[in-house]
Image 1 (tube, helix red, strand yellow):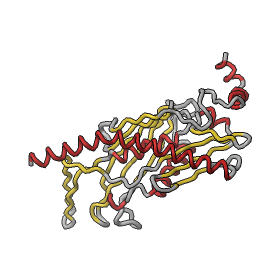
Image 2 (spheres, one colour):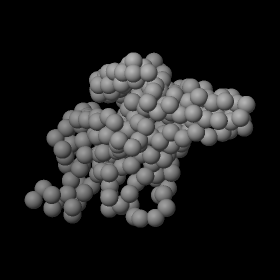
Image 3 (spheres, helix red, strand yellow):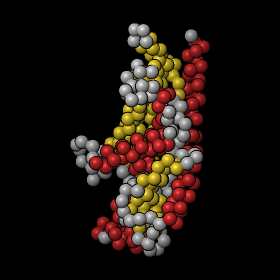
Image 4 (tube, helix red, strand yellow):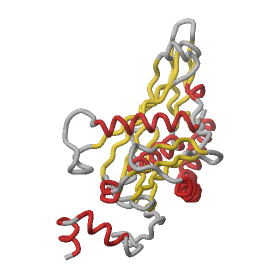
Amino acid sequence: MDSQYKIIHPVKHLHDHLAQDVRPDGRQFLSFRPISVNVSSVTRADGSAVFKIGNTTVICGIKAELTKPKVETPDCGYIVPNVELSPLCSPKFHPGPPTEEAQVMSKLIDNILMNSAAVDLKNLCIYKTKLVWVLYCDLLCINYDGAVIDACVGALTTALKCLTLPQIIYDPSNGNINVERKIKFRFPVKALPVSTTFAIFDGQLLIADPTNDEERLSLGKLIIVSDEEAICCIHKPGGIPVSQDLFIKGLAKSKQRADVVRTLINTAILTIEEKLDSSNKNTILNK
């Protein structure tokens, strides 16, 4: 009966629950859904991760390629994030070129990555003005149920943490490139930015980690991204204004959430680090 009521009167269904200080899925207003992280799931990628928040699931695969640097940054490589929202993740998306929402997400994630200084692009340089790495980061959403940016940022940072690149020997005199694929190095990641999404309702009511239904029926959305030391990005795509008290409440909650997420990611990465160190040690000994 409740599911039929939700389909016929979705707004009233949500507001009836909120009036009783509980959300439709039973959570409190500022409680979060469980998170799971799986690293190195895509064997053909140089770094990969599956990040799940409740039902929202995003897979990130990173492919590293050698190329010439950009003219304006001759000693830096570059990163190209791309979010794909396919019809498989939600019926609201259709086959065809990237949707406007996917393009906005891709740009937002690129800004988050740059603002957080999580990655030093100079570490992607092999030989100044001649050869650098470009990291193509494909983010595929396979289940869209709210807080997708949070899942995308989580999947991307986790994939970067387990990214390994082969040793490159470059001869500038003749342009020869020798790739030592048996010797791999972990790519250094300086910070782990974590995104936390909030939905805003009437009466300055703040809802943490909203589902798709809650986002769709809310009057505004607030995304706060922070690393270990500072706020990296605040994104509020329109909607009703947020009071100072509400913002401070969201900021405090996002910091607590970020600490939990970072601990989870670092725990998942430990097994990858041990395997890589052992593999490189064996390769060097065999030589």
